[in-house]
Image (tube, rainbow, N blue to C red):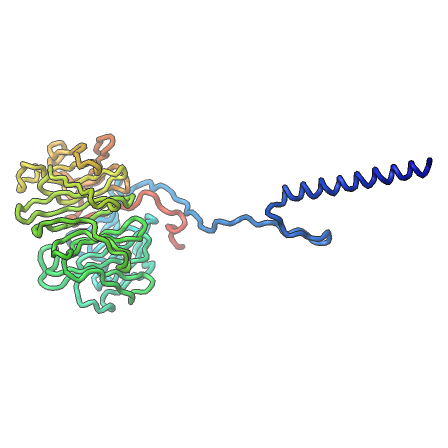
Length: 403
């Protein structure tokens, strides 16, 4: 009897033991796929590290008082002006004279400037030199600089170089080169036909747009990588009398707007081409004259225009109008008779917003295209050549002034 009981106990023990092994293996197969390296009981398991994002998003603050860089017609007089108060300071750097402001850096507190000695610097708002982008004289380009454009990522510089007879706003021949900011000796020539009137960078700096001639000797819009590769033709105009005068890439990179001059009629229009569908070309021919234009954040275009049927010699006949970039239809306009001085001068965009700024009645004004409200900024104190608005958001860390 004892023998049977002992045999029964041993049999049950064996059954439970086998069942335990089966359950353990089943759980392991379900929870360890994919399998992890096993450790012995004497080792401390190595913790699994999660991927780390090393890209630090810079903290930004909103500028209390928007600032503009204002260039006087007296070359060498560059001022930084606070819009609300009119407080101003002359921008000076040691050992050279600033003659042009190329633009504001994306951090909102530094500028790219051109000096009298043909050097390009990055400076802070107090005139301290933060770095030299290029010394044009040392590059031996054998041409005059007609225009400079710094890429948004600050890694490239596009130069329109002029040769031949100097005309009112340009040279007889103008070609485009790009220069790497990492190595100013690395120069890429993007054109050879001498018809480059403007150049514009895409927001991510991966492409640059410019004018050049096609195989039929007609001026068109082309895009390419900064080093000239991946070149593509966007427009297919068919009249040699058409000249493209200005280019601006939309903030999304999906469209390029431009001014086109019909030299036979002596009239200029606005044009829009989509970068992905080059057959979709829109002409805004409800105007017969365009001085300047800009992209608004809502993908509309605002422009200083002469409407059809108006007298080009009368400043009072001009208007500021904004257009739908998908249809080319006019949305709204400001007529000079609604302004304090009944004339506007040098309209431009304010800090990536729906507001535009301009001079009228010897004062600077800001106009909100959404609310249609006008606000006085400051009294004009100089004979203005141009002005450029600083970004409203500034990067807190990069904008700290060294003690």
